Image 1 (cartoon, rainbow, N blue to C red):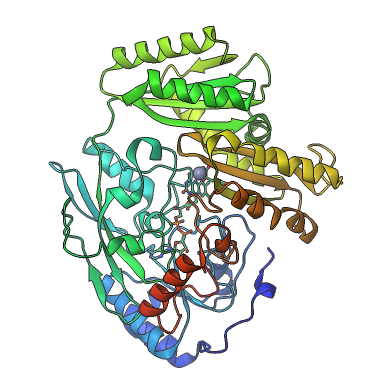
Image 2 (cartoon, helix red, strand yellow):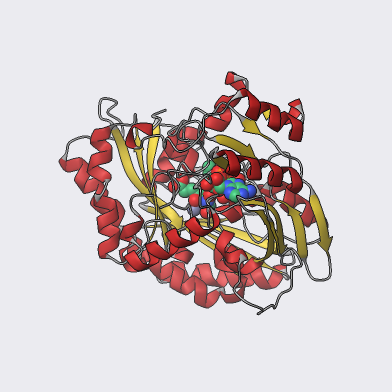
Length: 486
Ligand code: FAD
Ligand code: 2HG
Ligand code: ZN
């Protein structure tokens, strides 16, 4: 891993950890709540892509909000910098230290607090794993209003901290709408608590929104109260092959019209991302008739199987007749549904398995969304450094996939190794391209370390100044996740 720390200097205002600090933390957490062993620290210091690696000497694992409060108050007084960490699946280098910041892991705060089966309101600790929360809800007939490929490791607190979007935002909306309340510890140790979860409350600023997407820069989220919908009783998944990006858009328009209220996901991927994923999973393409330039995954969720099946079949028949779709399959049972979803959810892994990946998670108006992938491939080809098979070239391919339903493209440049040559061809090129289309340089993954110098491509100086003022107000010593965000 490249530490990337050569891009920034350690801020000398932060104290270096000493024995007295360790003693203090042992007093709060006992020995068991501290990790100091070098081998054990590696997981927490390094990110999911193995691209960013810090040198923290200490991980703290509090079990209660009160412990988080004591820890943060002490760190603030001592000017010890900290990095809050959930499941460490973030993709912008936000969850790892850059230098020696103390890592505060929420993984021991993992209890479901309560569930109200009348309102569907779930209250839980920030460190509950997303899949665990959803399995709990499944037993009650409910569903977590967010789903994503990292569900087996990411925490609900991490999801809220980076305002994750995921695979069903199209149906269930953003966390800015579904999160009803939060519990968070501020750097001075005070505890902000809005877990009461009223659906309607217009008394003053909606402060919880500040934490949703704050990426650990304002405080540590310790609890979440979230509104969960009824679990759909019936689901269908169709996997379609189409021959152009134009067709992807047309199918999307038709799907919204024809499937209407039962449409719950509309995802797309290009042929190269599917190819790399198949190679990695060692599986044959789910569409047997050949390889196509684009694939679409459509999910429907409803309450009446016959009704949904009929709607989906009519929609597909229409799309085939209009020659929008070249080929396709509909999952016949739960295991086929899972298998088709796993094709989509495994792309991040598949495109990284080549050695590494440069990720750009962007919002662009739909008509131009895929042109960014084409523009990148052209640029890399002109430089003569890209080849799918030739191992001597540093770049495998620029691929595109993502959440079409939300106008969110994942441009992934799959590489054999990380290099400054490739990076300098991509940046700031990609960001300038997005700015010129009035897009967002971060649709759902956040800014973290990767994008902190690029926020100006999507936000005005006035907006950036307001963000900095809020940050400085709540974290005047700058101990919360430094070197990141803005
Ligand atoms: P971490 O990675 O640990 O942390 C992320 C950020 O939040 C860091 O800045 C960290 O400091 C901060 N943070 C974490 N916990 C807290 C807390 N309790 N209080 C304050 N700050 C905190 N994202 C999407 O939006 N949509 C997707 O579809 C999607 N799919 C993914 C698929 C894969 C395979 C992977 C690896 C990642 C994917 N992601 C996706 C990225 C993503 O944002 C997450 O996986 C997830 O939301 C991060 O949660 P985490 O618990 O791992 O957080
Ligand atoms: C997804 O949609 C995730 O699969 C990850 O947001 C995207 O790795 C990526 O670029
Ligand atoms: Zn995504």
